[in-house]
Image (cartoon, rainbow, N blue to C red):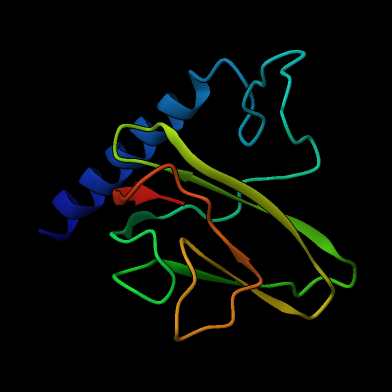
Length: 131
């Protein structure tokens, strides 16, 4: 039993090594697109989540989605809130500067629960969206 398990483990390791050797690029060095243009070159996608919802365009009513961002860096950072609907169409696009060691809140519309630093200007209600 032990020899069979050992043989299976060695075969698995040999198979993984062979697969790694077949890559057209070294480990950790995936190819990049040359001269790719970015709308916001200083920004990187850090967090994205789905399930965003907004069923009312009026302040302090209905269901809204809020996002809190904390900047743990020693310098101010720009954060972009790009909201897409279920089909991928951009519904809102806002950018805010967050000072070092500070928190900022974005909501799809004003809420009674939080004091938003920035609120969305959605094109309509949002269901199964992403931010």
